[in-house]
Length: 151
Length: 151
Image (cartoon, rainbow over the protein chains, first blue to last red):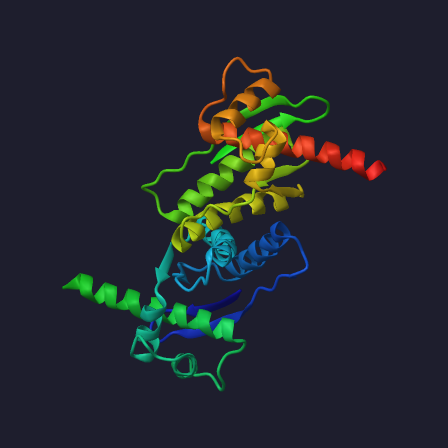
């Protein structure tokens, strides 16, 4: 599972990105525990104010959706245990916020992530770059939200 | 979410049954936390040797499967955190083990749960009775497994 941590006051700044890996040979409960522990470490390291996750519509079938849902449940639980509000964004919202249009392709989104965070290269692996795009989306969306609420 | 706790040496004996309730008006992360905390309380109270859950095939659509998967992920995580092995049984396996045939209806299964546990009435609510059926299925299946492995 990819993750990205950004500082969101002013221009987004990269703090950390990476993936929490689990061993596919392990039983599912053990893999979920590895995921939970890895994500908790990121939360403890950075004490984020908010979490943002992608809303999932892509699940190809019911079996896949169950598996993805299991991992997602562990992610949402980690946020709730630390009292961190969790925001959700549709893939099209992420693309719109980061690349300027909701049908942007993966390469365009990743290039914009690199540009926005002033990085020398596109963040790797892809899952981490995708997670950073969601984080940037939240920074931009919440900023617009704050401005709008002043009107 | 229904749960049932049985003592499985010899004839299964009922220790506790019930449901962990969550408030449908709460955000999903908060509901998953309520589920996790409630299940952890049951685990701490009884220190079970094993957990048994039903394998899910019923999810009506992808959205439903995602939601069910999220709750299930939290359940599997709770088992893994306590080092408790989690066994899975198909609904047909539960029906076969408890009621004698894999196409038994809900009423037959619940009546057999009552009979096997020597209860005055069918356990309520339905979700708790269903959970007890899965627990009984594991007791019977693991007993057969032990016998078979001696051959």
